Image (cartoon, rainbow, N blue to C red; front, side):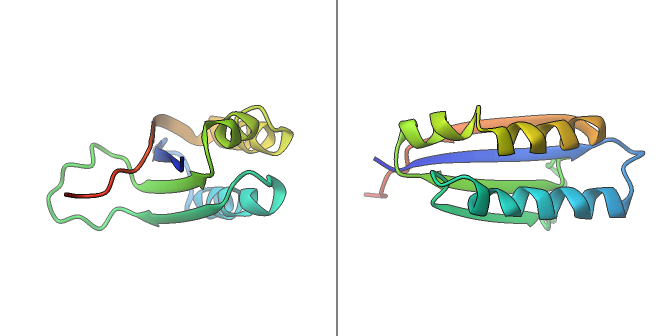
Length: 103
C-alpha cells in the first residue's frame, strides 16, 4: 500500500536565500538518485492563517510501501542530503502515513 512521507522544514534565521535554494534543489534531486521514491512534490507556505509556526517548506514523497521508505532513509544520497541540510535547519517535522480515500 502506498506510503507518504511528509517533511516540513523550518530554517535557521541565518540561512540565506541561496542556502535555501540549494536545499530545494538537493531535495528535488533525491528521486533521481533513490529508486524507491515514486513521486515528490513540494512547495512553500502560502497560507494566510499564520499557523505555520515558522515552517516554510513542505516536501511530500510517495513510496510504493513501507519497504520503499525504509530503503530511502539510510540511502547514501539521503544521508548526504541530511548532512547538507543540518547546518541550516532550525527544526523538522516528519509524518509518514498511508493515504485513505474519503467516504
